[in-house]
Image (cartoon, rainbow, N blue to C red; front, side):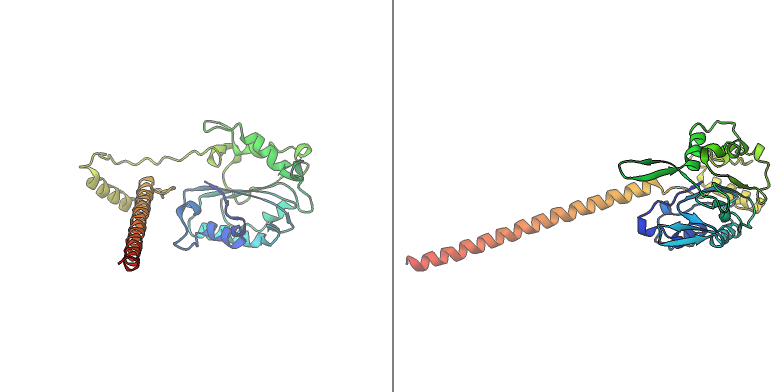
Length: 286
């Protein structure tokens, strides 16, 4: 699962990022803005921007420190919100953001060493600013050829960074990550490949078998002693469509009713004016 923070600019804050990672969100936050993961989820976290030794800036207004980020990942681990994390960061002195990690199953990669700058690749002459950093540019160039059926391993991606091209030294931290990178498919983090869980229970997909399926699943979960279902990743479309349709119908009804009331009011006023005018004419011409 890719973590994407794409909100209204003034909502992209350190607090909101930590809340999304740790799941400490109010009930009013919609599912589309939550990180719906569990202990079987592989999470990709990519960060970029202006940074320094042990911090990354958020819109030049505040900073997230290496300690805050490390503690957020530890909360995720304790709350079983991930299986593995691939953390990538592109900023000046990016390696400093990897140093405080202490939670298991985290693979970290940074675009530059401590004391080293990360450089932009090219700029847009119309707006006069850089649009992408070199490290990110060449990483995307590699990933654009990856498909769900690709056989590339994470080792190949991490060995593809050429210092002469990215103009900085890539730092890779693997001590918290136990798997052999030469055997980890790159599609574990890229390519939108979903794991399939096989159970030894035959399910009847007909209407009559629905109740029996629920009983069989409950028995299977009880026997295994662990939870055996995926969290829904997206809202139920049927429910959303139904609610939106009902809202449109209600709005249309209110509009029609308001129009009828307005026409009725105009008609009453018109009749009253005619009545008053008729009485005045009667007085003038007895």
